[in-house]
Image (tube, rainbow, N blue to C red):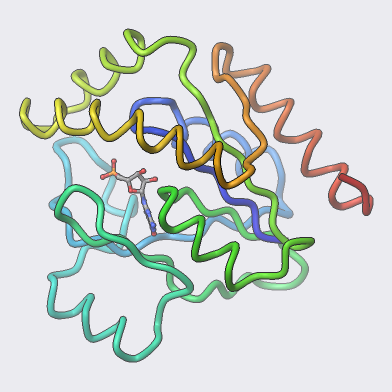
Length: 182
Ligand code: 5GP
């Protein structure tokens, strides 16, 4: 199964995904490639950081399950290679989710859209993240479009107002899918 976690910037995707993976050894977290510069304080292994030419060569070699441009930077998921029976977790944008839905059979995809409890909370999180201010403002704008697109694609929507509850809800969805339901 491929678990796609989408949601606008600042919604807490990274935190939710980190918890899911830490608590379930049967999950395998994909590491994306990006041409974005590493943020101050961002761990070295948050992404595989590459230049545009390297990224484009990988696209040409069909090296990505999906890839997209987000606010001027390229992001892509290398073809997943989980060991054994693990399920793949992707934390990607909605354009990427659309490509995954087109390439992976529907019964093998669990598509989750994390929604912010309020636009104000989300804007504050984005401003506090170390991006240049104009970049943060652009991300706030893009967030609304991201939510609308995710809803239109039929994602399971979860309002991330409480981390523990959000993690539990996703874990329940994963368990249902593994059991052959949902
Ligand atoms: P950020 O620059 O904040 O780390 O990521 C910007 C956006 O790109 C977020 O919505 C994030 O989920 C998304 N993203 C991260 N990795 C990938 C990827 O491999 N593919 C796609 N399509 N989006 C990604």
